Amino acid sequence: MAGTSRLLGMLAKKIALASLASALVLTGCGSDDDTAEDTATTAAKGDSTATCESGSLPLKTAGTLTVATGESVFEPWMVDDDPTNGEGYESAVVYAIAEQLGIDDVEWVRTTFDGAIAPGDKDYDFNIQQYSITEDRQKVVDFSAPYYTTQQAIVGFDGTPITDARSIEDLKGLRLGAMIGTTSLDYIEDYIQPESSALVFDDNAAAKAAFDAGQVDGVVFDVPTAYYVTAVEIEGSSIVGILPEEGAGDNFGLLFEKGSDLVGCVDEAIAALEADGTLASLEEQWLSQGGDIPTLTK
Figure (tube, rainbow, N blue to C red):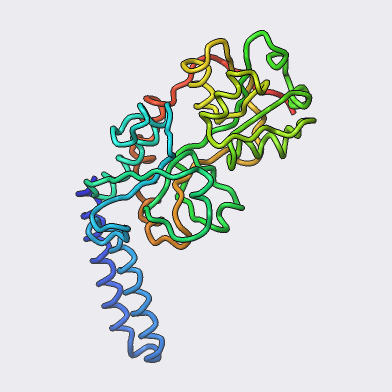
């Protein structure tokens, strides 16, 4: 993959030189100002391409991709609370992106979910922990192209009233909860609009503990997390239903500080991983889901 990047870089440089030569030939057909502007534009494009070469990437630490994730991480996104092992969908995606960029060294740091969305400089290149791309967040941070698209689902205990729910209306009288700062919480507040305020938790671990203790009737998660919670973590729970899709689905993107010059290069890497089937293969490996779950009606 790194060889492909070098080949593309060489091709881009040849194109840039050809464009520059054309601009010089056309000097007699235009003003000096026009020629200077064309040359500057060509040079700028060449520089932009060059920054995606592994040795020229705008990284926080030269030669090292510094990646942030949650203070605690869980399957199916990462395994054994260890992002460095390359196991779990998001960990595997990061190492695949690093390979595409020609980077061998990946360093991990931990952050809170909500704290990373705050405006300002970051001490990492990007953050990955199921960040949904939203207009409000894009006002203060930048996102990559989506590396995964999902929907929201609601989880409840078997044999309790929530399992009889067939529509959003059926959920309004129940106690619901979700993690702070997530589109799961937004879905409860904006679309379900329950009669009692949603319970808000610092992280998914706290949400699952409260659910297991009977403090809430149901918890909203993204679909892969809901599958893992019900199949592995909380006995006697099940997915009540997939929540009706609002908008274009829930797109997960890598989170960057606003104005990061690295976004374009990472977008190219994600596009390559999508084109060669790597993302689909990783989804199949880590996010495969079994059984037909009904979608609740509006």
